[in-house]
Length: 156
Image 1 (spheres, one colour):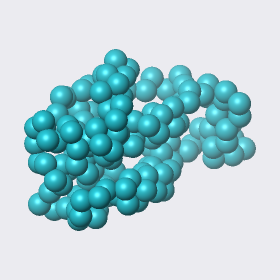
Image 2 (image 1 turned 180 degrees about the vertical axis):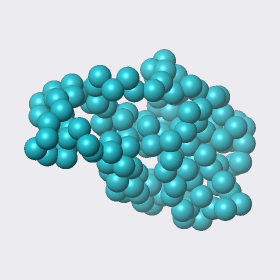
Image 3 (image 1 turned 90 degrees about the horizontal axis):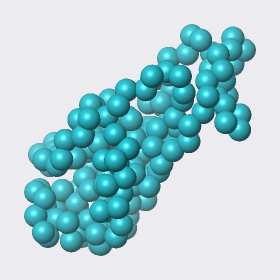
Image 4 (image 1 turned 180 degrees about the horizontal axis):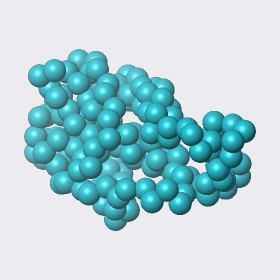
């Protein structure tokens, strides 16, 4: 989060696969690109997993941005959504360019964390700092933000 606490995000060790807060054991196969079982994911050895994650993130992140944006009572610019791998932040708001960049790693986490980061970044279009007013606004749209922040910090 812009100007927020820097958090180091762990790299996946390729022994398991995470998607939307669920952990799957990886089974490599030659018969499909990617397919989910109960606790397993079947991956083609040749699939570019980061490309697959990015494709899913574009759809899911946009949907959640749209839903959360509609809940804002204050009129703010609708930001362009960017997605990229970042190692020290979950999201970045660029007020000047009217963009929000979300960390691709959020696709691996429970959707509640994505929603919190989106709220956090949208609130920066109103308060471009981490003032008391900023956090009051965040709590209006995400009342349990303190717990979510703690969980995200503890998970890394």
